[in-house]
Image (cartoon, rainbow, N blue to C red):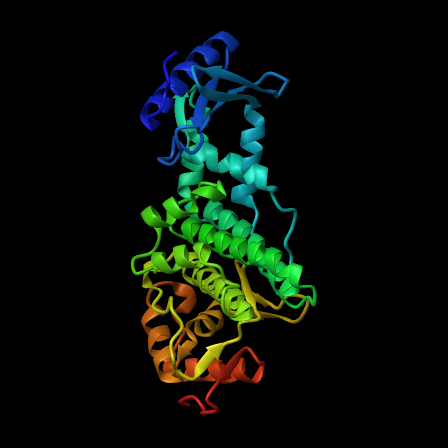
Length: 363
């Protein structure tokens, strides 16, 4: 038995099988997808083969080639056409979420977009061309998926950390770590790395994460025991860094700007601090800050940007950073020094910003 171990060999094997299966099934098109196809994968990763045609049935089956598992799925072309229509036709608004695509549907469109076409009558290429014309549409769906997952995990972490049962601290750690993993996935998607599998977040951030991103902090927080010294501080460290990844995604990433411009990954020692109790969700019109089991605020993107930058800085420094970022996307272009100061005041009065040393920010 020949063991197929390299990523290149597995992809080559998958293409060969897809070509043969497409011919035998009289499929109109075929493509291969999965972690190996997008440069991830391990020695045990499978290959997904999609056979596309107009036949009535949509089926799934597994087969093995040497030691490599091949998952074969038959899809109708109109299934893919409908999914692409929904990706490109729907907006994500804070006042009307609409009928969301499921995780499985979004993952399938990502696979269509990033997969390796083996044979095609022209239909798959046309669908990919449509997706390529509006790349932010699909990226926003992926970012939205992971921001929502991160919020739910952070919500669980917060609730469990407040429990009087000491046995709830371990699941609180699990939830806090998942919040950070999902926030990392959102950040990778903001950098254009859309692959869905959670376990590849480290490799995705290593190859597609923003310049200046403190990857070693991300690794350390997921490896260390947050309960070792001060459980509450340890859990807060997890959710706080998740919050940073999420607000960078919800502002710069959502607007299609390079997240490498984000200047404050680590909390500073200045007086102005955003509230650690709120987590962002992004929409086409607004950014929503949500407190688990509590309040929520709808903010224009420029106000959310000022909030996110207020991470242990002086008001003046946060304003300077915001003005620098006003040039990277039209949604922030209206920011001026006076407007930033007004936003800071409004956020402070709403309880979204605090000044821990009691000093007033520069007005």
